[in-house]
Length: 210
Image (cartoon, rainbow, N blue to C red; front, side, top):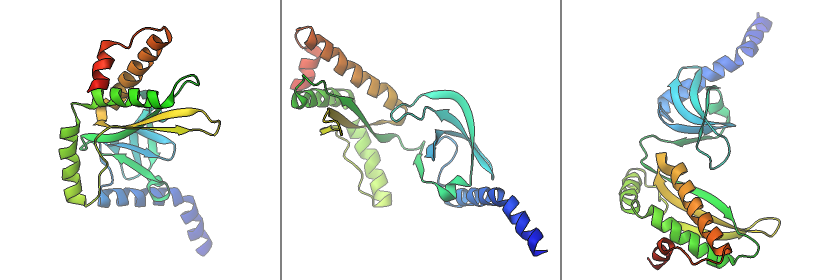
């Protein structure tokens, strides 16, 4: 009887863990339908939850890319017990996003930092006041110090000695991908114009002056 019981436990281990994971999720409300989660190698928006698994509309796993792959994946709830879970709640209007851009070897990294910072400030200008209210509300309820809503750009090097620019912005969750692409496109367009020995576009001049 003991051997049979042990065999049953081993055979149903994953099912039992999935049920326990489902119970944990339900009691703690760690995420719900509509939230965006990352767990193990899976990332996506939650579209359905059962006691045994969570169904996700899969997002591209490449860091910084927020595009749907067109696939639906079923993640066992047992992973909630064993893996790190990252959650972007659908009720959170704003979120912090970081992306990096390499600096060409012939370019002055400090100048490129100021230029990228100005572009980030320009595209994020409509949001800081609203984001500040949103984060202040979260801080009042959780007593957690929230990050600054002002964009910040830093210079750092990699193991090969190349310089990189990393920008941190606060933006609406659903607009992260489009805002990042607009910022990078503006930065690269200005790079190309400088390489062609043309003047900085008036739009960028006004951004840097502001």
